[in-house]
Image (cartoon, rainbow, N blue to C red; front, side):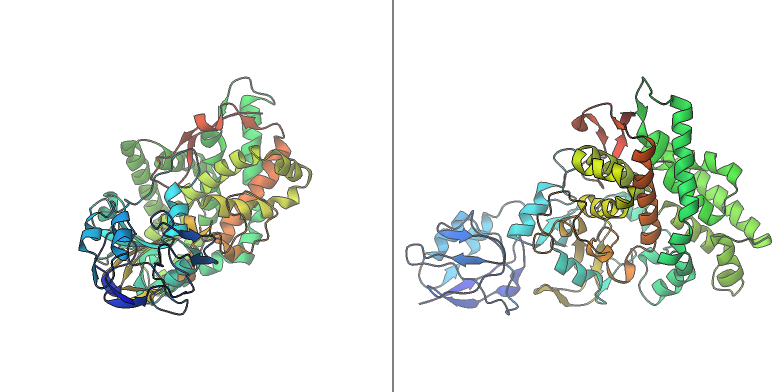
Length: 501
């Protein structure tokens, strides 16, 4: 006997697109969609690759073939719906829909230390394409697995332009960002490629490798300063964030931009304040940095040298493609983009290695393992977890789920970096995990993948290849759960980290 299911617009994964579809009771289907084990008596689910429903009182839950566009679940199943499915004939799910659970609010909150929010794993298992509610009560699609995230981030049907009315903001401050003149990070093609290409030659793999000696000097000098100021074996804890992690990334970028050596200490402190303190102080420091950058760009317009800002002056500026203000915005973008993520990656990397002493001992004995450590840390923590958001420009489909023009979309790259269908035992930290650079999505995917990826990797490789060689007894002065972490709904990070060595 057939049962006609009336799928209504719901608060869960999927939408009303699947209305009035007929499924046969008692027929065996291949299942690739969402797990209903908690809701359906007798339904047994294993991994997402091997799920089969069992008969229960002569009824099997309708599922769909792998090649069908209806692979995704149309709603979260409730006990009311389970009861409705046992009624022969036409089933109106209005009552079942009325008992839907609350739509989850995004960003999800970490429950402890640096571990990802539990919603990531739950949705990845049960509903990898879902809907969430944002701070302004608007709704957005969220993609939880790697395959769907990659498909979305390379789709020409989606927009990264923050000025698009459907671009999903995740906090109130995002609305103000819409008023600012965008850089290529938040532009679509062809404008995106035009701006990005102006900087590309400074951020290739080869360019980053040429900077490795400079980066090594920056890291070594900061370790030297730690030892000089606090001694070979300090008796009082030292804040690792303030005294090391927050200083290295901006110092590297200042050298790339061409900032005079004498100005770097003061600017480094402004960069640290901008990312780690109260809003008013951070705003003041940001204004200080922008004011300095404006004066510096004007100096380079008058007298170009061999640095990134001068590159923009003698090329795009002289050709009439950029104004001085454009160069200031791009220079400031280079300075701040990824800065917090790098600081957090350094701190989280140290904590993670200390929690895995066997792997840390290997690194101490063989510092050349630093690239492997870096790749796994980038996957394990996904420091930039909230930046891959898009607006739907025109009707399209991602992972079998129809999406309409002006829908909002979030790619949970943090969840994708723990996708069990792509990584073996993804919740385990393993520096020997075979990884290619493209495997992790913390740098994004597609045309908007982070331009600073190679530079970031070289910085992290240098830090982890140097730090435990110079300070082999580096350790936390407090328990891991007593560290100060970033707010649980923000990108994962550590704000205060007392250490000894």
